[in-house]
Image (cartoon, rainbow, N blue to C red; front, top):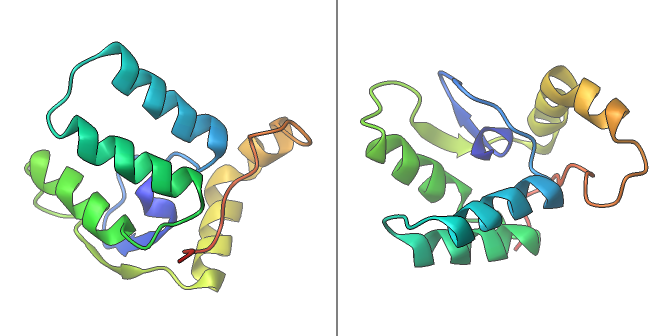
Length: 111
């Protein structure tokens, strides 16, 4: 999900940041045991509240855990870049979930 917020040279997976997608990850944490589970719960709580100020850190932590060689986040996307990314990658998602509560894509970095 973090690719929506951060810029990296390479993007492998893309998932829109919405309350529904965040809740799916929280449910996965509830069903399974993960390393750094408390860290990810705190991240998702912040993201659920619209605070993405740690998105670069989170992206790069996951990237390092996956032994990433390319695709490290170097900066936040600008508002214009994020909007373009959302339109390019998630227009079908947006159209298929119009007016469904929780499916709205959350844009901006927050505080």
